[in-house]
Length: 399
Image (cartoon, rainbow, N blue to C red):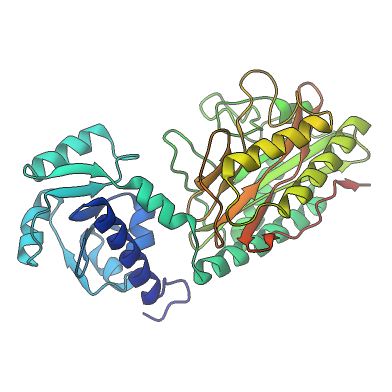
């Protein structure tokens, strides 16, 4: 397939081999991959299909819709067309793949009704969860994946650089967001930002201004915003942007599936000194932890370090939210989904590893006033974090 956006065959081969090793270690005979992002990760297509990965031997991609596209997109050797989910057991038999005694599935995201459907399809199989193994494998990126995220990060920087050209007092948040998102789309942004957490959703990101940026929402994020209606209840709303207030631009760039997460603060004229000081403190906190976030650092310990440093700087009550429902994380893994392992969060014990990509987002939230802080996408290296998003971290105070 001659397509610059295609996943190389070697990537899929290595990923499936890694999953097969995890299945062997867990004593699982095979895995049936159904979740769209995982299907793309292992099979290089997001068409409606099922990928069966036996603990040994060739994997089988079974496609319902659209077979011709899946066959073109996927480098896997065994790709066939099926009439629907009920045809899976017979199709496995046709390809001499024995029905598994232990069948791995992504039980973290599989709806209950589908779980029962698959259990009926495989009555002699025990369905076991392999989602943790999949997510741990996906947490460490290959060199090819890192380059994809570098490309997305470079476009995040272009989006941030566009903000001063379109930001103007009197424009609504949603109007500025529309212009900025249109520009991102012209750069190749795929539009959809995928998340794994049930009920979590994101449309480009958050563009919020003044005290509206400190309005909380249901989303697992330090910022929320009112949005344009209660049905979404997050993100840009109808508030008019004013001078001398902070404007938070927290956007995800999604390129060929891979994501870059990026927050910058702008202001038309000088915002309150309290917010300027808080922003400098959050940037300083980020810069300090970049040097200690090395392979072996436990994710929960990194969270506690950031929490302690924010408290020492005088921002304990504002750090990562306000009130009892402030979020209990300061960063997250990122790749094909916005909420990948590792979570830089309270109680997490996953050590960092070279090749992980994490977004750190130290932010200070002041109800009734505004928001300050920073977010960058970083690569974990033996020497600490390499920042992939490079637009200046300083608050951008515009004329």
